[in-house]
Image: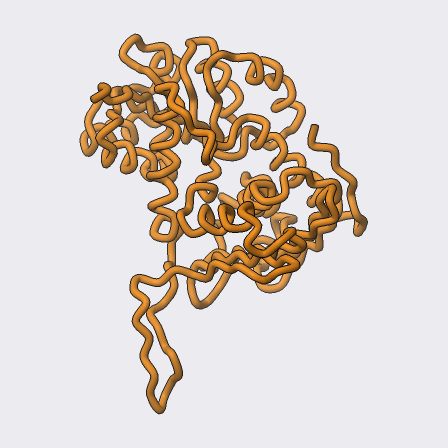
Length: 338
């Protein structure tokens, strides 16, 4: 059996803890070093999962006992840390987005494209087993030619105001996952029409952002994609996809702890609540994302379900930028993802 891949984990906040737990559970990975600008966060992480702690991310990336890097630090650091990983010849898995500014993304695009080591983006939903099976069956032609894809993505509750202020807005922060999901079915998107809504949150409105949005994408082959987002859902984390074609319909509904349903005089087919937190809903996806990245690091064949790369991250940000323009200017925006 191959030796575990030795990782540097950069960033030990909420998403960093998600990756730390996945790395710890994997028999094929070990955390060698955790880095965080707030050293105490790194120290708490290694106390739980092993490794050593540092406040110097560049030192961690360059370390001789590090084979690969996971970047889970704040978005403004991503470009510099990706560049550092490429300089060190280390494969890197970076959380989305690459940056909030497409100019900064494009400044390192050629470097990332030509690098011998892979850059993988953390669009974990590509690895959700339910969505993966849906995509496989669509590609197998089960519903004929795909005509329409409907993605519903609603958070259980709005994020803290301090997060909203630095998030880049709903399209770059939230819908960006759905843009990547859409492209995993319809890679070549040519236009974006978005409506941004302020329906319930005074705090989000005060930040100049939207608390809900409806976005329509059109593919080069005439396919349509509708993405429905909201920053709240009283019934839990709402994550559904419907694929419609000439020969039928395929859909993935929300996930509950069990499939037991109860029927009584008070309710019909009542079930358990939906998952309330993204980690509960997508835990398997994070672990499969990591497994695919480790396979990539080891040079194994991942063509059956490849990890999203730098170009996928760039395309999702281009779509997010176009949606922002569309929502604020009230027009359809043509896009070229090449």
